[in-house]
Image (cartoon, rainbow, N blue to C red; front, side, top):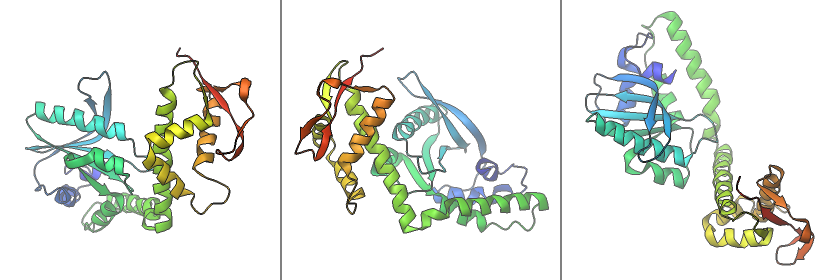
Length: 273
């Protein structure tokens, strides 16, 4: 739907009316464009590729749009891959590159850093406002009705981002997802057969990722029954269930006062297959 609205030659009959405010956000003039969807973008010096949601080509610019619609959208590696691959593809076509990240928001600091100067963040709420301001009276009645229903759906879908409380929930989801990725990287660095306690992993996690620890502690600052430590213990238990780790029975019920839990489990990293 988004690509359809942005395409001046789309069957909606609105011409560039939906494209123009979008290009205005990028400080690009309205011009002749070609809109493609699911464009394969190869990552330079890597054996992988990504599918760009939407690519808009103008006479001078190559605009790669990554569209996210859910609270678990912030994949840093995907953004990095699409920017590096997009730059290479734009250069091969002799065009200037611009990455556009369309998402509910808020953005994590890692995503902001990944986007950097090569990209622009466009909140979904802003798109909805722009599209709602387009005069649809002259459009075919069926198309106008479809667009109206689509915008109504989007208002309901993204209205929660306007709520500070719900915005915090979305931010918390980002904190938990990124922290889990960091912890998984720590566990993944263990050699096969390594014995490690939850205390060891926690100590190392605090040393390697102090920012994540701070965010996690802020997440449960007002909770009397949950903490960053219990989050880590829950993740380890989950991964043990999935067989990324296994619990070692040799010292399963060791007690550690500094940890603050009655049981300090000992894990063994599985050997690589």
